[in-house]
Image (cartoon, helix red, strand yellow):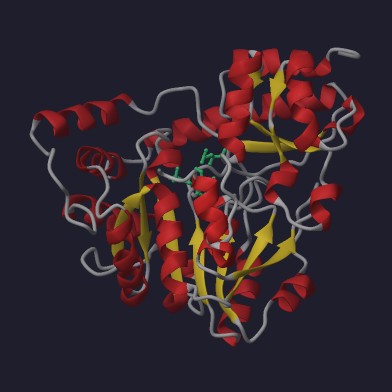
Amino acid sequence: MVPYASTIFSEMSALAVQTGATIFSEMSALAVQTGAVNLGQGFPDAEGPGFLVEAACRAVREGHNQYAPRAGIPELRRAIADHQRRYYDLEVDPDSQVVVTVGATEAIAAAILALVAPGDEVVTFEPFYDSYPAMVARAGGVLRTVRLRFPDHALDESALAAAFSDRTRVVLLNTPHNPTGKVFTADELAVVADLARRHDAWIVTDEVYEHLVLDGPGHVPMATLPEAADRTLTVSSAGKTFSMTGWKVGWATGPAELVAATLAVKQWLTFTASGPFQYAVADGLTHGDEWYDTLVAELRARRDQLLDGLAAAGIPTNHPAATYFAIADLSGLGVRRALAQLPEFARERGVVGVPVSAFHTGEAVEETGSLVRLAFCKSPELLAEGLERLARPGA
Ligand code: PMP
Ligand code: GLN
């Protein structure tokens, strides 16, 4: 008899990780179940660019349907290297310093499994993206987190310094940051890089929202800091850049030894990412700026629609400079422990978001109980409907 997954996992107590569905899957299922407006899981409801769809169809028709090389097709690796040079003046060798992965998720997983040994410490900010604690636990590592506090999510330098120790092996950064929409400044990155250098730690930086900066000074890749370049693995993804989250084409770039270590694990996870989509993404990355400009203008309008609507309803929020997400404090609507209350809230109010406490540990879980992440990468009509339901008195 095949044992249930939970039985198998419970036997692996040293590597015990959360085995239930992710919070995003749960919240999307809740929205379907209740017919609520889904402002939870971060996927845009508008299609990505038509030229990319055409490029994917062409790649299938032209017969790119067998295994791609394990590090990715040369066309895409070159396009990624060109992208890094064009936008950030970064030189990466497409043959030894780029690996194509199944979304950023696989790049993060492979990097953590490659770099973190049991007992090693990983420093990250919280709220964090949910795959970070899951993968650090799977590697047997210990997560050391530093709080970014609503609504400003400012960097607390002394708390950051205190999170480092002689066991720190990796700093796991995310900029622009999900779920806060924070874009780390060059000065903030320099503080992180300096600590990483002093503790001789690797930096894995998740920059999937690099092209989704809506205002402010813009995205600064960690790898552009000279003191960080030789210890930084940069992760990104076509999912966010081209509004094609289902394509799952991501990549990691950086020093050859870090890329080789990531690839060495990646080859046993999936071996290679889907071939035709790699051709299409190569096309997208060499297509010019027009798409990025359109995307940012639309997202900015949607963000402002959501923030203005929430302000008009008297609901406090942060002011995200990037990403798909805003954070709202729903205590005025009776939300105190969003994780437990959201099913009822979805039924009564008809709106689903993601409880911010799902991205926290320890006492922060309780303290962030009234905060809910709302995605604005949705149609104006859907946002208007969601806002109308949130503003309704005493639902
Ligand atoms: N990192 C962050 C911060 C994310 O928000 C997401 C979700 N898109 C991912 C990684 C995963 O990206 P992908 O869908 O390319 O695996
Ligand atoms: N990145 C998306 C979010 O933050 C979700 C991705 C997923 O469902 N794993 O909503």
